[in-house]
Length: 86
Image (cartoon, rainbow, N blue to C red; front, side, top):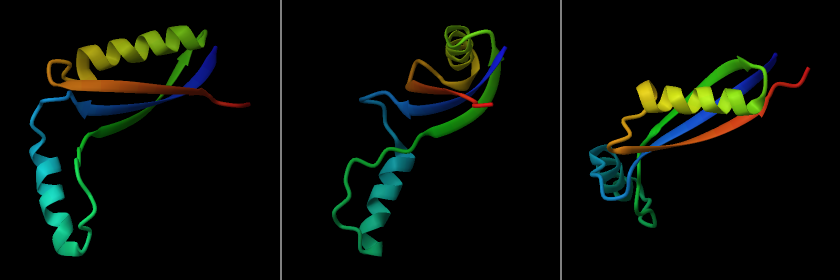
């Protein structure tokens, strides 16, 4: 069995309102950052999975995202897997 680190980035789907991103975007100019646009706020989740191979680990993480970690009606997710060396 191998251990994998999974990094999951969850963001709103295009066209879905992101009130937190809008608030951040509106506040940045008052701090002197006038060159920033299209701010989106999402979630980042890190976890460790022990599985026989990368395909199994990825499949399990996708299932976790679809069932619990992301609201797939309004959110998209991207998974990055890396096997722990050792």
